[in-house]
Image 1 (cartoon, rainbow, N blue to C red):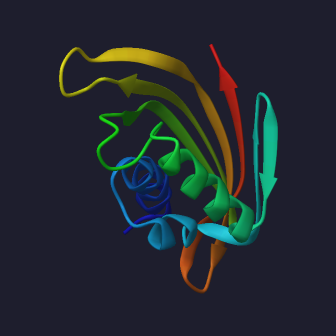
Image 2 (image 1 turned 90 degrees about the vertical axis):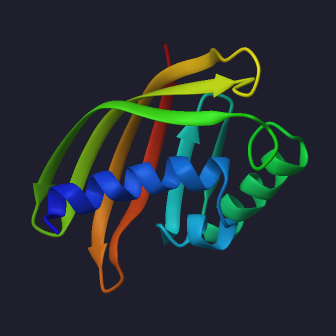
Length: 129
């Protein structure tokens, strides 16, 4: 698989796993010291990313049974050796089992690094609008 395809796969797997998948597999796609910045908060490190995902699932805002979907649309990837940038638009759909609607949309600005375990997300900045 090319680097470009592998990076696109990481971004797609994160979206799918946030909605329906195993959270251990989800956090394994991040580096140990990964940082996640979004309006209203910041998380750093796999343990905190896992705790945040568990909290969102417990609140019913994402995860199995929540009827939500993270949809990745336009995406550009630039690879520079063992580092890469991925910029992608996203849509966050709610009520997908009855009357789907977009609750949020915005941009993921991701920085990834090549590791022995493949490409991992090192820093995600989320902006809305």
